Structures are given as C-alpha cells and as structure tokens.
Amino acid sequence: MGRSLLTPDDLKAARLSPADVSRVGLAGLRSRPLRVVLSALGIAIGIAAMLSVVGISASSRAGLDRTLSQLGTNLLTVAPGNTIYGADARLPTESVAMVRRIGPVQTVTAIGRVPAGVYRNDLIPAGQTGGIAVNAARLDLLETAGAGVATGTWLNAATAEHPAVVLGSKASTILAVRTPGMRVWLGGQWFSVAGTLSPVPLAPELDLSVLVGWPAAQRYLGFDGHPTTIYTRSRPDAVEAVRGVLAATVNPLQPNEVKVSRPSDALTAQRATNRALDALLTGLGAVALLVGGIGVANTMVMNVLERRSEIGLRRSLGATRGQIRLQFLAESLLLSAAGGIAGALVSSAIIVWYAGSKQWPVAIPGWAIAGAIVAALGVGVAAGLYPAIRAARLTPTEALFHG
Image 1 (cartoon, rainbow, N blue to C red):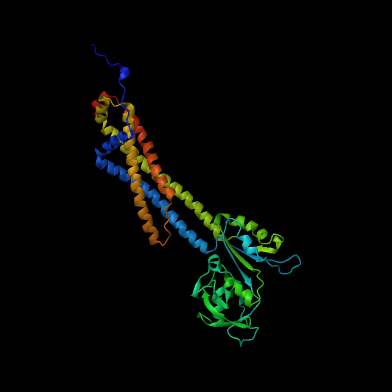
Image 2: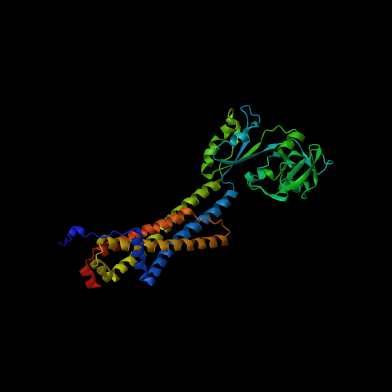
C-alpha cells in the first residue's frame, strides 16, 4: 500500500481564534512584566490627564452654570404695556397656562397686583402704605423667581386659600414684622404672617411686596385674576426663541400690548465661557492622546527589536506573517486597554476629590470616559500597526541571526 505525499497545497496554516489571539498577546505581555507595567502606566497617565482635564472643566462649568443661573440667565419676565390709546393694558387670565405650552419653557408663574393697602395695624392712616404693594402669588413663585424663605414658611395649598401672607424682605422691615404668627391689617381685615422672604435679586419688586395666595386674593380682596408680571424660565439654548414668541402667546389678539424683558447679559457670558472651555478641552485632549500614542508606539517598537529571536523561532515553527502581525497588534490593544481603564479609574477619583474641594457639582461625562477608552484602543491600533508589520516582515533566518 503506497503512502500519499503531502503537497504544498496541503500545508495550510492553522487559523487563530480570538481566544488564541488573546492568549498569545497576554503571553507576550507576561514575558516582560516591568516594561508592560511602565508602558501601561504611561498610557494611564495620558488618559487620566485627559479625562481629569475634561472632568474638572465639566465640573467647573457646572458650578459656573449654577452660579450664572442664579443671576437669571434663562429668566424672562412679561408685563402689560399700554394700549394704542395710552391706557394701561391687561394680561389675559389664561396667559400663564398659554405660556406653559411653549416647548422650551421649563417653569412659569405669575403675580397679580391687588388694589389694597397693607398696614402694621388698623390704626394707621390709609395713605401711609410705605410704598408696599400687595400681590396675589402662585405657589411655584419661589422656584421660578429664584426666591428663598428667610423665616417661617412659604404659602401652601392650605394657606393659599385663607387670610395668610408672606412678606418681602423690605416690606417686613417697613412693617416691623419679622416673626411668623404676627398679623397685618390688609384690605380692611387681619391677615396672619406665614413667613418672610430673603432679598430676591432677580425680582426686586418682590422685596417690597406682601404676597397673598391666588385663591385668597380673589376671595377676600376682590382680585380679578389678571396677572401683572409673569416669570418664565426656559432652556438656556432657547431663551431668544422663547422671547420671540412670548408676546404673541400671552396675548394673541394684541401682542403689541405686552412687554417682554431681554435676556440677561450673563447668558452671553455663559456661552462665551462654554466655547472657550470646549476649545481648551479639545486641545488638551489631543495633546494627551498624542503623548499616550507615542508611548505605545515606542514600547511596541522596542518589543519587536528585543524579541527578534522569538519571532524567528515562531516563524521557523510555522507561524505566518499574518499571525505574527496579529500577535503584536493584540499585545498593543491589550496594553492600551489596560492603560485606558486604569486611567479612567484614576481620573474619576481625581475629579471627585477636586470638585468636592471646590464645592462644585461632580460632572464626569460618560461620553468622555467611553471616548477615552475607545481612543486608547484607537491609539493602540495606530501605534502598534507599524511595529506589527515590521515584525511580520522579518524572515526566520534574519530574526534568528540578529536575535
């Protein structure tokens, strides 16, 4: 019985599965642990530096946005103007509900002027009001106007139905009423004081006001339900667009009788700052990635030079050029992935610590972490491609001779 001879076509290189590629790559990295640790450390430092800059800048931006929001960057106010005959116009009673339908509007509330005087007691002459205004107020006024309670409590669903008031900061001083539970003489009857407000920089008219619940003002003081000032907060990127439609939304029949405030100058400053930070982040991130890529490339080139004898031995045992190339590319990817993950963890800890020390909101963008790891892998591919191709081009004799 004759023996069949193998032809060159029968000698086919075995294909490496993904698991085999991973094992070969890990074996190559384990053979030089110190160099691998130092190389991964370099990548981790680059990624950590990039992410730390991004995270700290994002936290700083969040803190700045919070500060600027307190300055009313997205706050617009609406008030009645004059009719074509010069008389005072009125805002429709349903105007608040209509403004709420505008998509970018986040919150909307209103106050309404009440034709009544307020006094410390019932013995003070009617003309001595001290310039204090009486306004009906909706329950969500504090959040939208950026107001805060100094003493006592704000109106709630119960007190808004009954004779109770909250005093503005200046009104409480003029009336000499600073303690909740005291009473003031309002509209010919006694109203109990539920609380007082802190100064409201965004709505200074509230400082010299006595605020009554909207239903109570209608029931006890003859309030007609027409708002005199509407406060709206919109998405910062849509403030100008909202301003453009507010007048027509509030009073579709007579939009020329509506006055709308202009956006805050702080909004312009906020956008300019965000643009500058975006440019800074892009530049610093690119530099950090470049440094990390150079480190990976240097490490992989040195690996090829130091492991020529290993490459020659593997080629002599039947490893193909493609398998050699795949091995070094896998090592580069594993090295970059390890450095990228370590860098992301280190940078997260740095951001949390630094933002906490500055009392900023902690902002670690998820896209930045995912992007950094993807970028690290991309850098690994780019940096390991040339060394992998160079290693694959070595012939067995050349590799063994120079090794």
